[in-house]
Amino acid sequence: QYRQHHAAPFFRCAFLIDNGGSTSHTDISNGNMGGMGSPSIGGTTSTSSSISRPVKSTPMNLTQTLKGRIIGYICSTRCSSFTEEAMKSHDATGKILGIHSVVVEEKYRNSGVASAMMKDYLSAMERLNSKEGILKVKMDKLVLIAKKNLLAFYVRNGFRAMGISSIVHGKEQWFELERDLPTDEDANKHKCFLLDSFADVDKEGSGNPAGVVLLDESPGGKVGDVTNNNSFDDEELDDIMEDADDNNVAPEIPPRGVEWMAAVAKEFNQSETAFIWPLPNYEVSEETCVCPPKQQTLTASPNAYAIRYYTRSGMEVDLCGHATLASAAVLLGTKQVDGNSVTFYAKHDKLQAELIVSQPSLSSSMTAASINNNNSNASRIAMDFPWKNVTLIPAGGEDHKAVLNMLSNAFFGTSIKAEVESDLKAKFCAFFNPKDQSHALFSQHVLGIGTTDVKEDLFIELTEEGFDLLRGIKVDYSSLSEWLGYSRGVIICCVAGKESSEVEIGGNRPGCKPVVDFRSRFFGPKVGIDEDPVTGSAHCSLGPYFGTKLGKKVVIGKQESERGGLVECILKQEEGRVCIVGTAVMTVSGMLSMPI
Image (cartoon, rainbow, N blue to C red; front, top):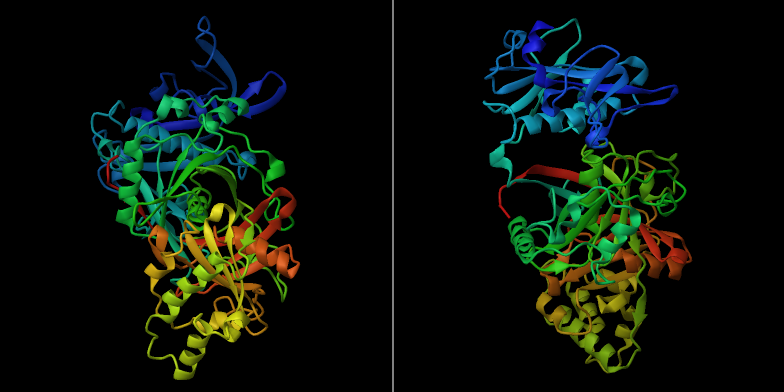
């Protein structure tokens, strides 16, 4: 008690308020739980059953006595080194904040109190350590020791496990953890991540890498300062989201912010990098959180984030599935937000994502959503995306011929890898040479050519034999951009035959063979992407197309790039939505040092 008296700013608690006979609740005033009486908000500290402190009230009643009891607390002292001896006393100039105890009354454990209390504590310590804080000597990091069963809790709250501790208490083994405290020098730094989206958790280097940059607010500042108020109701927020343009969903971004995001995306050099930042609290209807509809029951949350996507060339794209998946995994998989769901506001779409937290029983013909993730860095995410139709181009017309000529230039007019046999080359030449007057082989393998909604992607369905003939071909990507009838990418796809319809996940788990319904490849030369490893947004049209063709409500696609990946599509035609399910594996996390 004497030691903590000198370290009073580093004690915070959760206080259960007695509402005079009605149901008690834990104080969450000022957006935080606990911290009642901390000097950082000007009150007093007590362990009695009532605490007087400033509360939100009318101007004439600035103080109020709250009755109740403390149900949890966190206490710490500063020290110069992370040793048992150094933590026995409080050193006001110590650069390290050593957490001694994180305690919750037993009856309130496993109910979110500890998580909320830790979130509040970390926020309070960051305020103390800021330029406006009361500390004359700033701190570098927080440290603590924990038993093995609590490691996951602290890692979710941003701590790093450093190894087995030399400090011994009892017979059980303890582990050291630490978490950096941001300083004023970090004010222009932002959390950033790299993830593999739509990955196979048992296969390293699979899926589509995406960058994610987590911002505190709109890049370049807030237009109209609309995100500085967290008290908007649904109607007011809807008005803000319209932004004077019925087609725009996310608020406007200043020009400097746009330039900065393009520069960062070039630096990341990924096919897409997503930028996300919180919007005012916005309640999401539970009725819309139904993906996947029968496998899990997930609760909606008020978490609302703006999202923008940029390619490695610095070009903005309206929608990107694998970058959305990665962004959801950052927010939900690492507990950056509370709950299991988040809503993203892109330029023209509202996108919901949910963390799959339970698994159905396995079966021999299970869907991809039921594959268990053993990788602690992997998050299984279900995303609600818009349904996109494919409009076929009439055969024999000028556009149809132009597409055939473009494909001929891109595939037939280039060299073929040495390992491709000469007979395969001959088949390919006959297949993709529209100058062949008979068109026999060509007509046999090209089943349809069309475009997706608003002519975003060119859509080409082949026979499976024709699809396989493209393997090993060196593509002239510049030729694929010759036709002006699409704005983004080229989708080449086919129905999966019997031999290729079952895919072993990871190759080490017998019976884990989700049935693959279609195969695809995606080329995006018009947005700076030669061949995309896995393209989630392309499945907004691939899923509905093959679901309709095969008469299924759930279809699984395998994108056959060099990295490859699996995408599950749950079709909701009556709602005009597609639930896209995939796994994201985090590979890198750090801080971005490019100031806005």
